[in-house]
Length: 493
Ligand code: NAD
Image 1: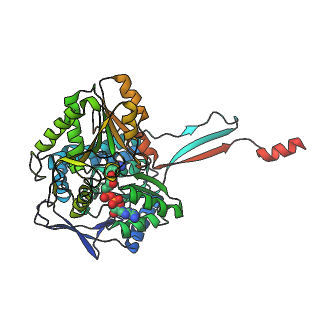
Image 2: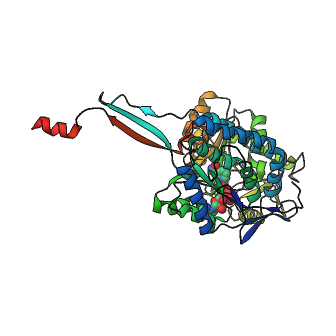
Image 3: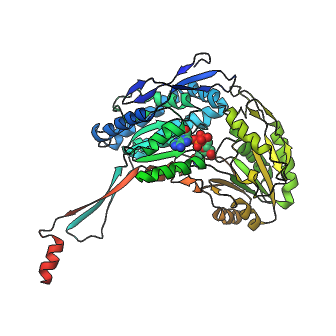
């Protein structure tokens, strides 16, 4: 990938790359130059993509194949993504600002591994035979693919968040239409381009349409030919999608926002907690749905913790996402910087103090620590999606848990203590889908991920993630010689 050549993105429909007009652009976060020009899919283009997905679902034989054959396509994608990992990671770093090293090791190689996981998981899908029916009835529950799935992707992990959905959908025999974020069309398209030319992948099984949420996204959500929407993005958009999808009662998975609490108790391994939570708060410029955004520290160690976190925040290498030593790159866009600025502007009004950070220059925001806020303030309860963390002091477990659960989100959380009983007790009281004990940011393809409360519906990854793309069908064979209801009346009469 060269930075001076503008990438000409295309829709991918029925196995063909299709140009179109009008176009929109994404920019390099490094110098603001145009990185990619992508066509906008209107309702007619979306209709074409849905028709291609439907045709492939009904007629290509994809869903009727052995799982092992679908798995071989996913394994090939794992190989292709590994081979392209360095180029794609550079592209992601330049298009959305995440440091190259983190993108390569965590996002892109992690995504290749997820293809391999789904290849194995595809072969584990099972139905059931009930033993509860009378002996003349064979009563089976058959796993079926749900159908044509629209996969709506955000910009913050433009490769990995797509693979979580694509891998699960293809594993069980669905067909997909992927809609990248309008901020990162090139990154997600680079992934989808790897499907092109895979032997044994019928055209129309994988499709891609570009465009903004309020046109292309809405057209997908409203389309009667789409059976399921899997969305990752903000809670506000998730809510709008749920409303729009209700007209046709589509199946939904919604992975939405977060405001992760981290409960730090006085008996914790302090140095480890400080190291982990400075990374947890500021890596990816805080543009992660499970970023450590609210750190709740037991009162006796509050001052020591604040001093340690401040020291680490000031030392975090902020810089060019392609530089080897950079831990924090620029934010994705001016829009995102303005969002962060709007929260920082309110700090004094809400009674808060910026202990360190708060400087904005271009797309860069320095790691920011805020104290003295009420846990119910706007800054402490709304998702900012920038390198901003709020610190609170808590007297005891009850106090810490009340602060932790006092927001509408429930996605990630971490608990810091050397006491195993406390760790389990507290983790079970936290309303969140993903709780880490004495660590932050551990994720595996094998374990389910998803939100509680307004952080979402459904799960991704693990076998629970596969279930989201399966519709169970009950099939009952009656081997008796008489119809049971007639026999019932005849015998009574
Ligand atoms: P966003 O909600 O603005 O957009 C996400 C996607 O939805 C984009 O592709 C966008 O074009 C599309 N979209 C927007 N409006 C739509 C509509 N009305 N109908 C259909 N599609 C529409 O989110 P974003 O700014 O791209 O991403 C950041 C958000 O994603 C944060 O809130 C973050 O917490 C969340 N996120 C959640 C998870 C998770 O797994 N829970 C993971 C990563 C990011």
